[in-house]
Image (tube, rainbow, N blue to C red; front, side):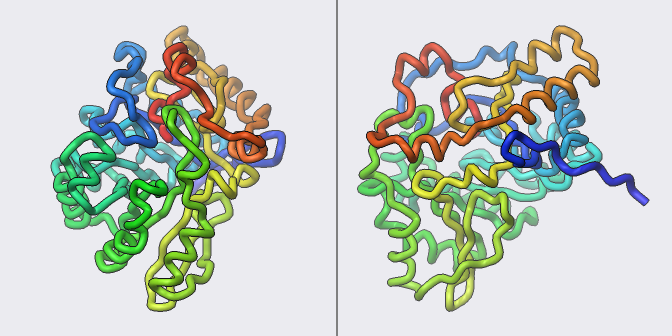
Length: 346
């Protein structure tokens, strides 16, 4: 009989540690307006980037503390060379039950099979539009065909169902809510609508650009019939819905209906900083301890102290602000690139 690991350690509000988002690179091959709208960025030094061995060691220390689910992110994670090797390493760690990856899909066609064989459990592909001209405008690249090719390759490799993420911005792509959902339903994917968030590089964020969960549901009801709530894990960021004609979708309403009270996620940057919230401005420099020779016991103590003292409720605090604008400014981002959403694995 396999040895059962104990449940996750708890923070000051009783939220357990269960999920870890691992950013393997801060770089990306797109410049999406809601995440990386600028031409130039302060990149993390490559020498500071954690090696696969270091990442494996940290995850092996976090699994006994409760981490069961991993999500590999970036920037664009498929820019990290030999990523399938990392997936294989992490899949062998006792206690890790699920490994997911979020990608824009541009490089996926050549890597989908290797990722599947390495043990990647699930795949999420960002897809904000089905129009080539709009894709170019929103991302700065004419690569919609590459994303769709990656999606097709992932299906062929065995990933099913694949989740699609659509960040909905009023005046930019909100007129495709219905058409993207129809595309996902016909292909057997599960689309998740994400409210536009005021995090990191979203420097031009304005409240009026947010299409709320309520508005999204109204539009879907008008076209597809009234959706009903579907079973959703308590700590899942997306609330899932069932359509009368069959098929499901989700809505991540971090901006208008934060789920801080059930958040079980920690975030590890590519250079080894651990953050307890996407909005957090302070983190724990694990790379320094790793490279200074910390023992496994010392790492466990650091990780335990970091989570059990956690008080972060960033999205709720942002919602409570009477005059809400972008959460940081350009000068802050230049001083500390860790405040960027693409660095924290947003």
